[in-house]
Every structure is written in C-alpha cells, then in structure tokens.
Amino acid sequence: MQSNNSSLKIWTTYQAVGRQQYTQPPPDGQVIASFKEKAWWLPEYPRLNAALDQAGGSLSASYRVGPRGTSHVKVQLLREPTKSLTLILDLPTYETFVDALKYAQRDLVTVTVDEASRTIAFYEGGPATPFNSYIVHHQQITTPMTLQVSLTEDSDQLTSRWTAGDYRRVTKSLADRAALEQNTICVDPSFLAQIAKPEISIPQPTVVWLDRPANAPDCYVFDDLTLPSIVSDKVKWRLVSLLDTPIVQVGDRFCGLSSDLKTVAAIDDYMLRLAARVDPDQYSAATTLREHRMITICRDALEHIVPPWSVAAHVLYKDPPQEADVLASRDAKTLILQLKSTLRPETPWEVYKRNEGLIDGVNHTRLVDRGAATQGFVVTDGYRGDYACWAEALAFGIPIATLYDIEVIASDPIAAVAEIKNRLGITASPPGPSQGVEDREGELMGWALRFLDKDVPTEGRT
Image (cartoon, rainbow, N blue to C red; front, side, top):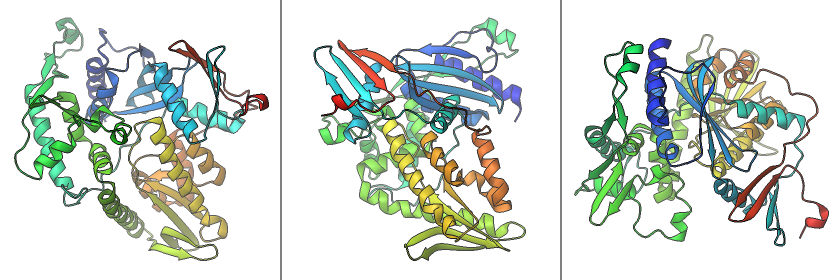
C-alpha cells in the first residue's frame, strides 16, 4: 500500500464525514474529535467504511458504556498497521438506557427502581475478573474490523420476490443516480496548496428524488427498501439502522440521501439484512448456499497447500452426537473447522446474538477435547466477535478466524493460533487482580441512571 496516497484519501474522507476543518492531519493516534449528536455518524459511518476500503485503509469500532452513562463509540481510521486517526463519539444516555432494557428483558442484567429518589439502577453482575478486565481493555483499544467475504451470488433467491442479482441491479441504479445528483464540498484552496493537490472532490450527502420502477422484480426491491408509511409494532423494533430503509415516500414521491443509496449498493451486508427482515424463511433457506461456499473455500485452501490435507465435510460423531463442518488430516495432525456465516452486527443486542453464535461454535469445536483433532478453529466470513467471544476462545485455545486466515491455518495450524491472535491484537497476558468496572451514571428525563458492575444487593431483590 502506498501510505502517502492512502493517507491523503482517508484523511480527506474523514474531513468530509467528520466535517472538521484542519490545515493538516493531526499526529497519528491522537483523539481529534468528540461528537455529542448521533445525527451525522449514523448514516455516514457505513459510507465512511466503504470509502476507506476503496482507499486502501480500514476502519474499526468498539462500543461500551461511558463514565456518565453515555454510549461510548470509538472509531479509528487506520492508515497503516501502526498508524491511525481516532474519533470518540459519545452518544445520548437514552441509547444506553434502551440497550440496558433489552438486556434486562432477557435476564442479562437486573433492574431496581427507587421512586422516592427517582433512581434506576442496572446491576450487570460481577465484579469483572482479571481476565475479563484484560479482554475488555483490549476491546476498548480497538482492532481492525475485517471486511466480510461476499458469499452471495446473483442467482441466489434471497426472498420469494427477488434475487441477489435483482437487488444489486436496482441499488446500483440508485447509486448511479445519487452520484450524478449529489453536491460536492468545496475545499479551501490554501489547504490544497499545502498538500500539493490542484483539487479534491468530496461528495456531500444530498437528498435525491427517485422514480419507483414500474416492472417486477425491480419494484419489489424498491418497495422493500422504502420506509413503510405505517410502521406496525412488530416491524418498528426490527428497524435498527437508517440504512434498513434508505428510501422515504413523501406524498406520491420518493427520496433518499445520496450517501445512503451509495452505501447499500456497495456493501452486501445491507442486502442480506433486508432479506432477513422481509422474508426470514426464504433467507434461511438461502443461507445454506453461503455455508456450502465457505466449505468450498476451506477445502480448496487445504487441498492445494503443499503438502495437501485430506478433507471431509459434515463429519458426524457419536456419544454425544456432534458434527464437524470440516475435518482435515495430514500426517499425524487432524484439524477441525467450525464454520459460521454471520451478518455484521449494527446494534449492541445484535453483537450479543452474534457472540452467542460464535461462543456456541467455540464450544462445538471442543471436539478437540475428545481427541478427535489436534487443533480446532471457528471460521467466519468476517466477524471475529468481541471480548465475550474471545474470553471463551482463549480459555479453550480455539481461535476465531475468518476466511482471510484460512491459508495460514492450512500452512501450519499450530503457528496459526499465535498469528491470528497477533492479527487481532492480543499479544499480552492478563494483568493482576481487577477492581471491577467503575460505576457509571447518567440522567434521563429527571431520573438518575446507574450502571453497576456488581450483583444486586439481597435487600434489593424482588
């Protein structure tokens, strides 16, 4: 990667999205902005991600509850493996409150209410162990987010009304329309002179008016991308991102934000999320195709390495019954791969559900404990999980890899364990005794909110 060129592209992208005015980039790794509003980054974060991919850099993010009860999101723009620009986004306390209620609904935290003092306390259990503190600290440092591997072909029938090819054709048309009509941001000539560039074209999010396609299945894709005029309670709670429905109907006309239209065309995740929401049964049926393609990618890598592995898929074991997605053997070594095709999570609750699936994969891969293999890996199409997953992965010595790691695994599975940890950024040992996580507090509509890393007191139980 040519770092100077990539740095310039990524920096100018940040200027456009962050709307910051600097005459030159700040020092590497410096926190350069803090935002209290959520309006700009929710629609622009995916566009920034896509732009960085094209620029030869990458973006990563972590999520935690901040010291005042705010949702604390840390974003890094990575120009080189050891250099980055960092943003800190503090979102409203309300978002943390909603997330906490979702966790409480599933008995993951305990809530107490004191009406006299107008205080709501969320007891998260704990305190955190030294190992938990280490792995949480690692998550807060933030490591690069791996791109999802596209496992969807145009012919895949993602819903009963449209295929992946239909979606891509329609969204490309919308993105082309957006690119044609969007405005551009004017860059200060003095800044251009300093970086020795005659001009820089930075697109500005612009409202674009759209025509609904007349023919099927294009009109079906367009309709599914449009925010319903009447949102039922069932649908309301399934809409978690502005990019779930980037098109809005105004009277008998339709419009969308240019950056949103370009993003949904560039990243397959939004196509899959849409299909899963509007037609979950057909989406589930199509998922088996992606799993089959993951097996094919793994088989090709294992069988074409020198010396090659002998590979079998869907190997069944008894007492207790278990299945290995991929079982490979070479000389006296045996390797098990448990495959997970996941959508990139957009909300904390989705993170929890994806993590749940990965932890299940780690436990399933413990066929190694039965002597069925000398080493095991959970392999995904992009999502590596967060500290909750890696607590399990490190405890049992079963790393969470991606399809990008498969060649390293095929070459030397034992060495791959250390290499994958290094790629993730886990290089140190857990620290000494933990004091737990500090109490976090916030205020919402006259109520005090407290988030506590401890069990609920006996007198507070109901």
